Amino acid sequence: MVDTTKIKTMIEPYVRAWLSKQFAGYNFEERGVQLASGKSHKFDAVADDGSIVAAVLCSRAATRTGRENTGGVRKALNDIGYLKEIPVNVQKVLVFTDDDFCQLIRRRASRLGTEPIRMMVCKLPPRLEAELKEVIKEASLEQRAAE
Image (cartoon, rainbow, N blue to C red; front, side):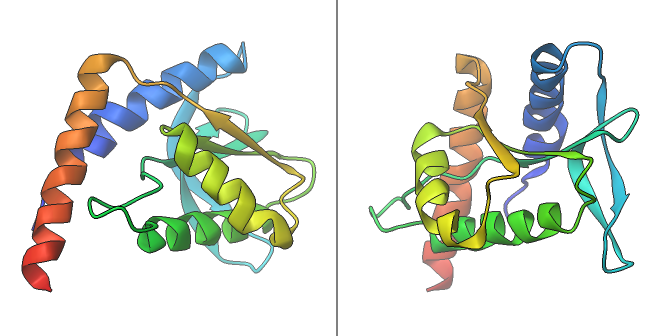
């Protein structure tokens, strides 16, 4: 199984630091948030006072073979569902590391009523972009082997 911990240990901390610059005065950490359903969900970036909650999406719009990334789309739509279960007074954010994937999700999710969710793109520095591409490549090759 592909080691995707680099996303948690390198990419997400970078995105949380980036969010702290976008929302000055806030620090972000990964933590659980109470949902309207009574359950809780762990989000990738939650402001220290809980007033901003974000999900980080590192997927690409297309697979290695050029097909739409249906797995990534499914995860993004699930994240939107979780964000919609957060109280209305909390800012909801989806952060993408790929602009094409952001545009794809805007189209796919438009019917879900995503107006209260802010969609942002965090451009990764070249070193982190290369690390992420390598993880995605390894995961793609592993999936191909399972076919």
